Image (cartoon, rainbow over all chains, first blue to last red; front, side, top):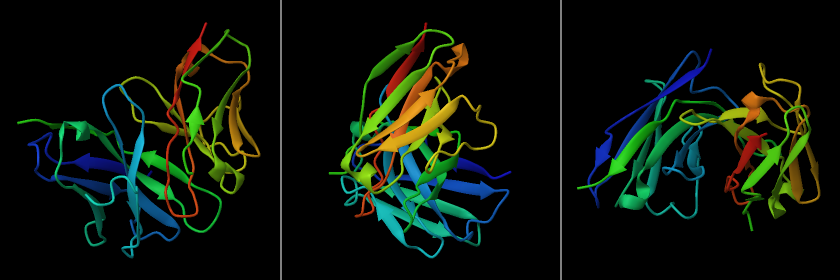
Length: 123
Length: 107
């Protein structure tokens, strides 16, 4: 079945850029209808959607993070990636990737999710 | 506004029925999806669309919507249903916010 796995550094210094990759297995990232999303969860807090990308490169971003976020896709590797610039301690969180159904219909959901990876911002 | 509002905490007696709600203007136009998250685990989709359950989700979970409010109902709550529950939807500008989450306690 479809599986997603996040990877990247677990520690990032303040003001630097956080970079994570999500590898999709058991299916193609070029599947029609599905976007691929990033969601984060600070310790002890709720979920925050960061952004989502279609295999063609079309993106949706959270307006509150848009100025610092870049999401890209590499269909040849079946991967998509997140870059978050100018990080601070407030960006410390577990970062999840997930398949995201959205678009022009009223439907919208995230399934399945990766296991998540903790990224700590600290000097 | 695309904000989604949930009650922070709800409790239910074992075997009873509980409704968890999610309010937001975007819910008048878009369906909510619901996620269960247990400590230390990734969220799991439990309800999507009008009232659909992914494979493996017990039929005691159901969803509904009226006006600006979406609801997740657990009929006959079990001890294993104790978890955090989050709603998610989208708005016409392409924002996809989550609600703040509801901590469900099964007594």
